[in-house]
Length: 548
Image (cartoon, rainbow, N blue to C red):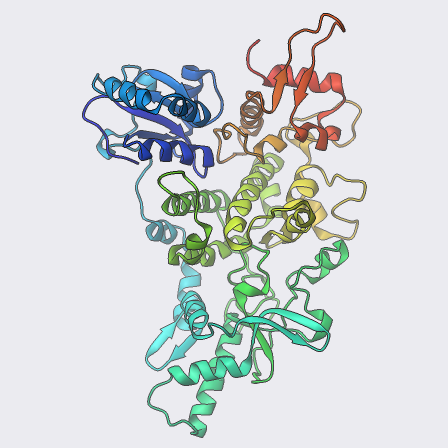
């Protein structure tokens, strides 16, 4: 944020990872205005202040002293009409006292122009590190070259640099293997970095081969399967997706060959945003130690709520760091190269130890599970925009949502699996999870949350679609949903979506035909099955829409 002013104040209600908020702040910064930010992500109780002041449910909401300007669209409309007058009026207003309305207070005046608690990304990640994982890496490093010891993250960084130009798509027969390199490339990279050993010394050969094996044992390196068994190019067939996920590279920890093809672990399944390292129970890296038998199951106590909360906050901080101060756009290329982002991906792998089945069995089971899935879906989209990219055409969109997702202890879930399989009650003419799919047990039962739909044996909560979509003129004020008050939070998201004319527009009464015409976002057409017939939908819109 800009600098706080001695008198007068611009106050913005925001939330984490909100593009509209980022653009509004950029517009003010570009014109030389500072502002105070009230983060609803950090202080969710302040939502009541914002809605009572504005009668709006979306963020951002911008005030100059006690005067409400509106959201990002309204701010930029004022600037566009007469930039000079906007600057003059705002400067004049800032010569007066700070806002008198207590609802515009700052949480901590000692922090100056922000009400977002200050902490560095590295410190935030350390707060949520798993102690046993750190101890294991100290005892069993991924790579040792001379007097230097590398953990998994350090080894990945070193190998990316050492193998620059060697990691590429490579053909073998009629099959193209993506993002891989020859064992000989790795061997020579380690050889060139080794110190004090003669070039053709047998001892050196054994040492270098030993480090290659160490990379395999630690899970930093994975061998590429032969022929058509390697499906990392992205086969989107449902049967292939169910059975090949997590089996895309063979990992033989005891042998190494210069002729084999290998991949770095983050490149094994780039569609899974939390697979920078492999912590699945049946993986080598996920085992309890080198002496533990393969298949030994890990049952760590994972606070799934605080883990996702920290991840959302880190992603918001990283996006802010790489946003253009003039227009709020995020530079995904520089974000992708940021060492803190790479460290975040490594840390985020810990979510592989989260069990959806255990969440469902806990307090407020199905409500807590639904809230967690919504949060993870939105977080996965944010991370994937940087790691995978953004689908820009209708031809690639279907494959993108089927291949991009997140891995839990219960298995891999694509974005489609999370939305249509878990949240929508395994909807579709062909269910996303077949009868033999073990993930089927984690489908949210909305009747357990308090939703009952007359005439439907399996009720579906249609408001989840608003929680998974950001409005055109603003974002829902809730960035993190909870199991304790989920239905209220979903109603808030619905109101935020419906308050803009771009989503719900009611035309004037048509005297000729004797009816009103309601124009709706295509979202209501896509999920008509969930919203019900026209009369049922209109009744819902009357509850969610603005007064009158």
